[in-house]
Image (cartoon, rainbow, N blue to C red; front, side):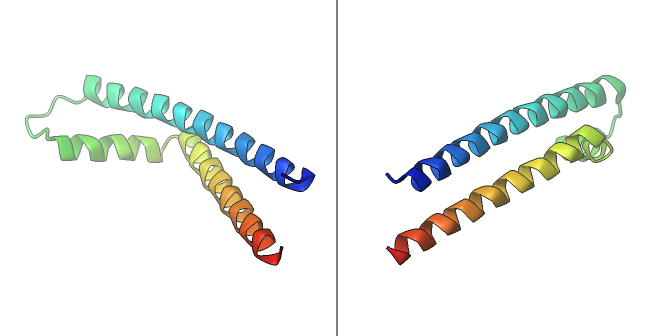
Length: 93
């Protein structure tokens, strides 16, 4: 593997690691939101579908969760860009 290829692989590994950390934190926030909804909501009309909507609404209002979503999108775009650059480099050789 060339020096440039090794750097690209190292960069991709760092992005994958970042994605894993971001998704782990998002899962924690989602679990906390679900626990809060579960604790506070005692409706006779409670269904899993409505419960999930309430959790999603809670997450939509969570600034940290929204920031993490943006960071996940950015990291995924970087990975896609790296993959495109790598395939272009392979086809040029």
